[in-house]
Image (tube, rainbow, N blue to C red):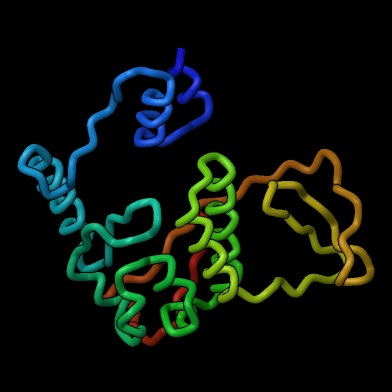
Length: 202
């Protein structure tokens, strides 16, 4: 019953264990450090996947954006960025001293990242993630909206901007939409690291 409830709520496995403990049950999901001997095959598989992406950068991150593993191509992302940003991909991508100046549509993509983070916080509240969201929000300029523009708020509700760009009109009923996934395009052999990247929907 508790596990079914946790599944319906979409809780991460760590929080499902906490819920089970509070309900008087033993944890159902083991938690093991990535560098433990028992997970050596998994780490080897991750390393193989990362290396297969060369010369393109590839990283493995935790829920806070901290880099757990990366291939040598990661240098393409970190070159020219402040050193204190290298350990976290969210800060690396959105901070003005990070990749943001090299991403042509950085503001649009940054708002997508923040919206996804907001959705995760709605599902699984977390003080550390909320603090990171607040920090990242300070790096992203507000969208320049005008008459006729559609806005998607943090709850996924579609609204149409009024004639006054500082006001938001009534919700546009029945407007279907989907938030796309994004990827960074550009390969070491095709683009100089100083060229602006464009992050686009798949």
